[in-house]
Length: 226
Image 1 (cartoon, rainbow, N blue to C red):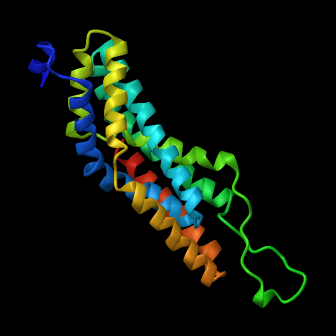
Image 2: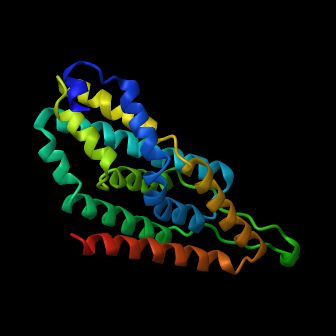
C-alpha cells in the first residue's frame, strides 16, 4: 500500500474502506465490552443510547484524525508508541473513570410518590449533558488499541505529504470505522438494561453497580498491561 501511496494511487476512498474493514470486525469485538456495559448500566432509553453511541464514535473519529496528523508530522514511531504502553494506560483510565461515573451518578432512581406507589410508573431523572463525557473518552482511548488496520493507517500517514493530508487520511479512516454494528448493539444493550430496571425496580441500583464494577475491572486489566 505504501508503494501505491508513492505512486499517488491511494485515495481517501481506499482509506475509508480500510476503516470500514475494521469497523465491521475488530472494532465491534474490542469496543462492545466497554460501551455496551456503559449503556447496560445506564439502562439507556433509545434516544440516550443512540446519542452516547454517536458521541463514542465521534471520539474515535477525532482521535484517528489526530493520530494520523501526528504520524504525518513526526513519523509513525511517535504515533505507534501511543498504541503500546500509553494506549493501554489511556484505555484503562477511561474505563475506570466511566465505572466511577456510574457509581457517582446512578442511572436512574424511583421518584417518591405520595400515594399508590405500587401502581405508579417508574420515572427516571433527566440525563445530564455531561453524561456523554465517559463515552467520548472511551471512544478516543480505544483508538489506541493496536491492530493491523491502525498500523496501516499510521504507516500511510507517515508517508503523507503533509500533516493536513495525514489528518484527511485519519478522518476518512475514522468515518469508515464508524460503520459498525455498535450502532445496533449498544442501543440493544441499553434497552435490555431499561427493561430489567422497569420490570424489576430493585435491580436498577444493582445493575448500575455491576456495570461500574465491570468497567473498573476492564480498566484495571488494561493498566496491568502497562
